[in-house]
Amino acid sequence: MNKILMWSVTAALAGFLFGFDVVVISGADKKLQLLWHSSDAFHGAVVMGMALWGTVIGAIFGGIPTNKFGRKKTLLAIGILYALSAIGTAFSNDPYMFAFFRFMGGLGVGASTIAAPAYISEIAPAKDRGRLVSLYQFNIVLGILVAFLSNYLLSGIGDDDWRWMLGVQSIPATIYTLCVFIIPESPRWLVSKGRMDEAKKVMEIVSPDQDSETIITQMEYDHADTPQENIFMKKYRFPLILAFLVAFFNQMSGINAFLYYAPRIFGEAGLGEKTSLLSSIGIGIVNMVFTLVGVNLIDKVGRRTLMLIGSIGYIISLGLVSMAFYFHWTGLAIPIFLFLFIASHAIGQGTVIWVFISEIFPNHLRASGQAFGSSTHWVLAAIIPSLIPTLFSIIGAGTVFLVFTVAMMFQLLFVIFMMPETKGVSLEKLSKTLTKD
Image (cartoon, rainbow, N blue to C red; front, top):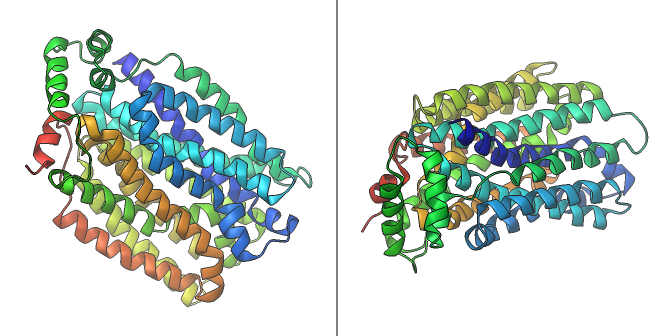
C-alpha cells in the first residue's frame, strides 16, 4: 500500500499545479488590467480567460495522448507545460505573449484532469479508490491555498510583483516533473496495449493479496470485445449523461468564477486590497480543511452522501451571498457566507467530481469519458469567469449569485433522483452495472 500511496500522491501533484495555476492569476488581476489599459471584456476574455481556453483544449484532446502514449508520459508532458507557462508569463511584456503562455499552462491543467484521476483510479484497490483519487482534489486545494498565500506574501514587493507571483510556480512544476519518472505505467493501460508481462508486475504490487493472473485475464477479456467502441454509443448513454451533469453542475455553482475573482468580489463588498487578499487566504484554508474531511469520508459514507451535503450547503450559502449584495450588507458578512460556500464545495463537488467521472466509464473508454467530463467542466469554467467582470457591471453581483443558487437546487434533484453510488465497487463491475446493453 505504501508504494500505491506514493504513486498516487505523485500523480496527484498535477492537481497542486492545477490549483496554483488557476488561482495565482487572481493576485495579478487588477494590476494587469491597469498596466495594459484593458477593457473589461478584453481583460476577462483574453488576459484572465485564455488559460481557461487552453484548459478546454487540453481537456477535449487530452484523452488522445493519455490513450496513445500512456498515463505516465502524459503526466510528464503536463509538468513541462506548467514550468514553461510559469517562466513565460513572468517574463511577458504585453497581453498577447502573456495570454499565449497562460494558454500553455491551461493545456496542462486540462490534460491533468484526465490523466491524473484515470491513472490513480487504475492503480488503486476498490476499497481505497475514492480516497486515493480524491488526493488529486486535495492537491488542487492545497495549490489554491499556496497560491493565495504566495500572492499575499509577494504583494507589494515592487511594481512588478505580479511577475514573481506567476514565475514562482516553475519551482513546484520542476519538482513534480522529476517525481513522475519514478512511477510505473497504469496496468490497465498496459493491458490495453497488449503488454501483459509489464501489467502483471504492476498488479502484483497493486493487489498482492489477489491472483494477478486472474485480474489481468479479466481486464484482457473486458478489452478484447470492445476495441472499436466509443463513449457516444447508446449503451454508454447513462454514464455519459452522469459525467455531463456532474461537470455541468460543478461549474454552475460559480466556483471557478469565485476563485478567479475572490479579491475583486471582496472589493465589491467594501473590503480593501490587503484585506481582500487576506480573506482569500482564509478561503484557501477553509477549502483545504473541508476537502480533507471529504477525502476521509468518501470511502465511508459514499459519493452521493457527500454530494447531498454539498448541495444543501451550496443553496444556503449562495442564497445568503446573493441577499448580502442585494441588501448591501457590509463588513464580514460576505466573507463568512463565501467561507460556507467553499466548505460546501470542498466536501461535496470538490471531493467527488474527479473520483466519480474516473469510475463510471469502462477501462477501454476511461480516458475518453474523462475527456468528455473534463471538457464539459472546462468549457463552462472558461465561459463563466470570462463573463464575470461584464456581468457584475450589467446585472450586479446579487443577481449573478442568485442564478448560481437556482442551479444548485437542480443539482440537489440530480443527486436525489439520478446519481448512483460507486463506493467500494470494482471498476469492471461498475462498467457492467452502468452499461445498458
